[in-house]
Image (cartoon, rainbow, N blue to C red; front, side, top):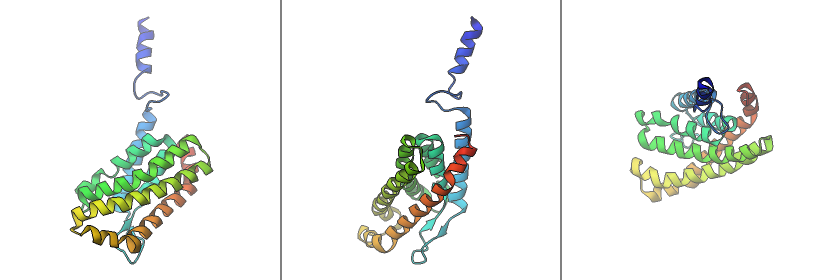
Length: 194
């Protein structure tokens, strides 16, 4: 009798496989996704539009998208937040961290929510298209609100940058993220056993 209650207690532990809980494997893989995305955002960034070299692309959102596809929207959201926390200690600081989180989570959540309901290539593409639109809109709005706070620019000057700089940069960024994710998410999720 004591043994069966011990087994029951162990089975309800938060890191064992449960229907809606987080398994030990999911926690470990989420930590790896966070580390990989953090490395991407801190060390693999470069300008993608010569006209706006101060706007830099990094592939961390691809890692976040794959995390969301492999383990669901909650994991994608966790990776989208935790992986950008180190930005506080960099030149981009607090506001850079906020902008990175807004840009990524606004793409990852819609994409992974759609993919959770339709785990096909079609579901992934529809999700990423919706996420891309949401991310571009969120980035433009966040730039209008946040950029004047840390860049000492007038809001009107930020708005003037939307068409020539912010819009093309963000569209190109989400397009790269979506295309690369579409090409690699299936092999990666299969390798992870999902």
